[in-house]
View 1: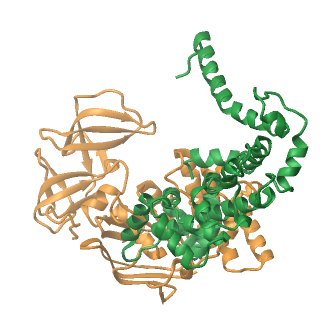
View 2: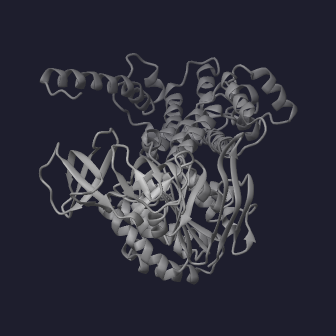
View 3: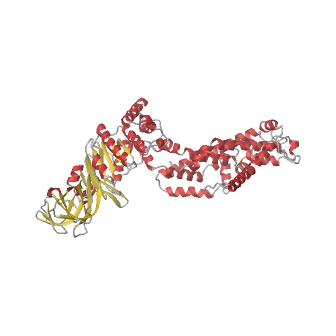
Length: 283
Length: 351
C-alpha cells in the first residue's frame, strides 16, 4: 500500500533520517577522532569537526608501531591477517557448501537424508559451543598461530549449504536432462550450468560471509598468541587495554576506521549482485 | 539416420507398472507421434528412448544397437523439451554449441553447424542474445536448433508446442514437419493434441493407460479405429457411440429404427458413428432431438439426443443452420462408414 499524504511522508522521512543519523553519528565521531592528536582527544568536550592530524595518524597507525609503548604488530599486517582470514573463511565456506549442496540435491547415495540431517544438526553447534574440543583439535594439528587455524574450524556452514540446496532445487530438471543429452558429466554440469546460475547467490553469500569472517573476535583471540597473527578486530580491543596510560583515541579510532574499510568496500562493490541474489527467485 | 525397435518395453515405479509391454518398429526417417491423454505414459516412453528413464524390462534399439544401458549422450539423439530447457546464462550461439563443444569438435566446424542451423531456422539475428530476450516461438526455434546442430540419428520432441499460443502452434507445427522432411531424421514426437498428431505423424501410436491401443497411419486410425478409445480420441468432433443389437446386417438403435451395417457379428455391440458421416435424410433411421447448434461457418454442429432416449449424439452438416432447436431431424449413415465395437472389451469387431 502506497499512500501520499503530507503527514505520513513527513513522518516516514523523519524516521528514516533519524535512523541514518543514529548509524552515521558514531562513524562520524570515529572519523573526527582519527583527525586529531592525542592531546586533543583527551580533553572534554569531544571534538565534532575534523582536525588536521589525519595523515599523520594514518601514517603512524599503518606503518609505525601503532600504539606507542606496546609491542603490537603494525596495523597493515593486522589488516592483511584479517583479510586473509575473511577471504579463506568466505571462499572456503562457499566452496564446501556448494559441493555438499550439489551432492545432496543431485546424487542418490545411501544415507543421503542422514547426511542431510547431520549437516542440519551442526546448525546447533556454532564455534562458541564447541570451542574447547575445536581448540584441542586445532592445537593437536599444530595449526595454532596460522591462517589455517584461523579459518578452517569456521569453514563448515550448514546455513550456506541450505541456501545452495534451495537454489539448486529451483533449477529446472530439464536443464540437467538437457545437459546429460549434450554429454555433460556431473562436474561439467556443475561448473558450466549450476555455478553460473548461482552466481548472484554466491555473491550475496560472499558479502555476508566476508563480514562474518572479518568480524571474528573470540576464535582468533583464542588461537593466536603470536602478535604477527593478530587480526584487526581483536587488536582494537587490546589497544583499549594496552599499557597503563590513558587510551590513545586518535590511533584507536584510525585503526577502527581502517577496519571498517574492507567490509564497506565489499558491500559497495557487490551491492547489485547482493540484492539480486537475495531477491531473485526466477531461474 | 536410424530405425528404432521397441521390444516388449515395461516401465515400473516400484510395484506400479506404468507402461505395459510396448512394442513397435520405427523405420528410418519416419515421423512417429505418440499421442494419448495425460498420464498415459507417453512422456515416460519418450524419456526411456532418450535414456532419461531406466528401462524395467524389454529392449530399445537404435540403428540395430541396444541402447538400454547407454547414457543419453551416447545414444546419438537430440531432444526438444516442452519448456525448451535452454541454458539461461548462455547466448543462443553458446546454447546451440554447448553439446558440440563437449564433444570437442573443432571450433570452425561448430561455427559452421551453428550458422547453418540458424540459417534454416531463421534465427541468425538472435545468435548473440540470451534466451530471456526471446519470445516463446524464438526460444522454440533455438531449442530445435540445438537439436539440429548435433546431427543426431533421432529427434525426440516432448510436447514442444504446448507453451505457444494457438496461431504460433499451427505455424511451428508446419515448420517442424517441413524441417523433418528436409533433414530426413527419424523422429518421435509426444503430444496430447490429436490434431497435432494427425497432421504431423507418418504414423501414430495411441497410448492409453500404459497400453498401446493402436499403431498406424493417421488415416488408418481414422478409418478403422481399433478400439472405442482410439475412435473417440481421433477425429474432431469426436465419434458418437450408441449401444445396438446387431442381427444380420441390421443394427437396432436404442430409440427404435435400424441402421444397415457391415458386420458378421450378432448380439449387443457399440455402434460408432462420426458426426461428419451422418447425412440429413428425411427417411433416415437416426432421429435427433436438437438441443444446441454450434456454428463453425463452413459447417454446423448439431448437438442433441437420440429421439426417445438419453443418448447424446452430434451431427455435422454443411453450411449454416439457424433454427430448429427442439425439433427432430433425421439422419442416415452409409454402412461402410459405421464402426462396431465389442461392448465389453471396446475392441473393434472385424467382419
